[in-house]
Amino acid sequence: MTRYREILTSVLLLILLIAFGTAGFMLTSRASFIDALYMTVITISTVGFGETFALGTGGRLFTILLIFVGVGFVLYLFSRITEAIVEGGLQATLGRLRMKKEVARLRDHYIVCGFGRIGQVICKILAENRKPFVVIEKKAELVDRIAGMGYLALEGEAADEDTLTAAGIERARGLIAVVSTDADTVYITLTARGMRPELFIIARSSGAEGAEKKLIRAGANRVFSPYEIGATRMAQEVVRPTVVDFVDLAIQGGELGLRLEELSVPDDAPCAGKTLIDSGIRREHNLIVVAIKSRDGEMRFNPTPGTVINGGDILVVLGDVSNIEALAGELRLER
Image 1: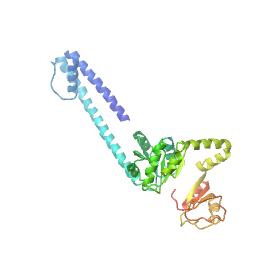
Image 2: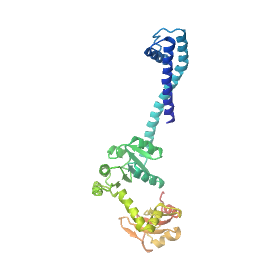
Image 3: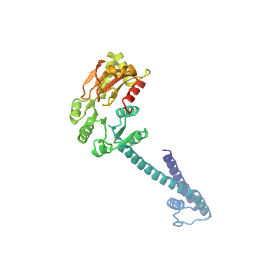
Image 4: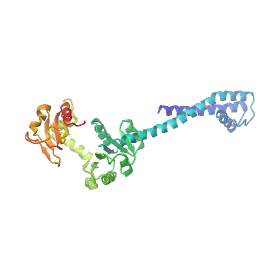
């Protein structure tokens, strides 16, 4: 922006220079406004078509002054404008190519469609948890802003197959559609589901009647209405404030350093095939296993010490962040 402000200032100075030259020829040579303006332009541009009116001694001296003052300035101005155009276009082109190369290297990432208020929060949380993702946004000014924040972004319509292909939908782990209208969300969901039948899709709903059913029929695995979630959260704050505080603390972490986290158990993990008490999760890592989700989707809450941990299970654990990280390392997970 500083460079473009300098160019704007230079253009204003050029206008003042032309006005100065025009006024000077009118005063020194009694020329008309058009003749004086024409003489000024061909003088400072070094075109040299010749004198359009007779120049006396005063006019010739003024022409010499105008040449010394104006020609160098005009050449400098043109060089700055050319530099800004060439470098700006080159930088933009190189930036887009670099962005596409980085997106092409993504694996098991998430595609976030839309960068409104909800999309920004989602991207912030994904970045904090080191989850790879790319944003699709149709507004060019927002794409530049996203790139400036250090996120990967592509400009285009999220419902377009070419755009989704460029975002690596064939390699993606999931897609999050948080655009502004239900209609656009349905189109995105239909397109993504058609391209990747097994893709995990989360969709935002406006909360309008029938919107959730339409999105599920279109292929969304999960549908959330921010308005309903917000209203429920506010009501629970009144009805069960302590429970809400605990859940917030467990999910977001806090001064106590506690977190509620999920950890996948590989088939060859040390704890696979062992009971919960024999796994040493509580004894060695000081973590509480709140629930176990099996490979087939069955959720077992508050599992007993004799519950067997199988490969492919997902453990929902509560405890200190450092202890969770230690267990994750034991399970050979990259966090």
